[in-house]
Length: 385
Length: 125
Figure 1: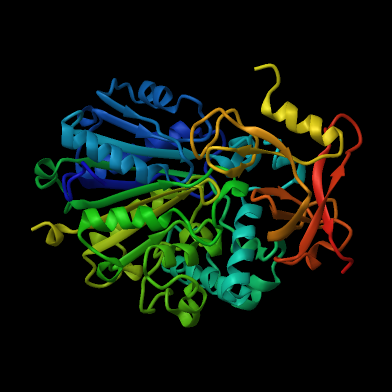
Figure 2: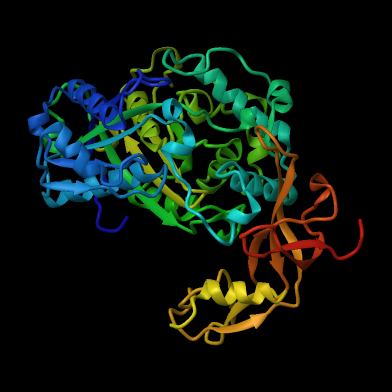
């Protein structure tokens, strides 16, 4: 991204709040505060160090006000950009810009949702669209199913290949103690599950859980004196291509292409240089689209690429190592959790699911119905020395 | 502005017509209807009535979780160069195929809901 400098900001603290099904009457702000408290403990800073507040949630119209009041802070820098599940990757770029310009010294990025407890419809009210709503698309599933239909038609992608993505995510989730899903899954079980919007069964679709978390960023100078090894922001990119699926120019080509290109250019890296891949898997087709558009395989080959456990534990390319939105957690806007997992992988904190010798990671966020794409490339200290 | 883009569009549907906008500067069809052209930024947009012929671009079958039978949702590329969400009727939803030629028919729901465009196969399957 023009204007942002490779390595000019670092992630210093990450944490999830309670996940899954949280205690009765917990609010999304409670979960954000819990995530911030834990992420500050992770880096050894306190609330009084925080002068940059960045957040996006679906359950509060002015979440920046609600969160600042709750925390008792009056931040110098605030950003509440909301573009769906990729918002947090946009936030990283905005926080990096703020840190680079000296608008703040320590920025927190926070998220929280109680959509499982209160119901998805209440947590995220869908706007009436006179050009789509009459046809009763079950959104967002139907929009992604339309994209899948197009990929299957153009490239011969199969339901079994889509199912392989759900199975790989489940295998990773079984290595993650806080993942929602605890039982193994087979391709046959994915295919025979309840159909939601063809070709998707419920196993092709992300979970509906509660959850939240926080990511803390600061300047490289400050980052070096803190508790944990800094994880540097090497590259950021973004692209918005549409809002509604009927306005998406080509359902097989996403904004991940320009977003990834910008992030790679800033980082001075390519897909071949990335050790850990965290992709927003709201639906199984997402993983294929983003593997292609981010250059891990060529366009149309994503289906065969994921066969045979290639993206599962012990596969050639580690993808969605926390178990993903499909099997770990998905509290509505999932992007923040990709940043948390990528950071932990680069710090070598991931136990049974740790990717050996990783120095670089990509965290790619998706928002709306393939509408907003934002890519963050992260690296260990070795990548900036 | 005396009439919103949506009101003009709905008035055409009331008459059984599928209307879209044409940008003379971009030489492109514009859909959904707007106040300015997304290709040029100009407010010069002309209304045209579609011949109602198109091709299925993408298709899915929605399976309602509780009551109701599965139904089709499709994206249709109209021959004039615009795309819209709709459904293909007169055949089982799972039989709708990408590339299928379809033609417009106005659907008039019961009650207060305004008419909307659906499609049927050009030739019987």
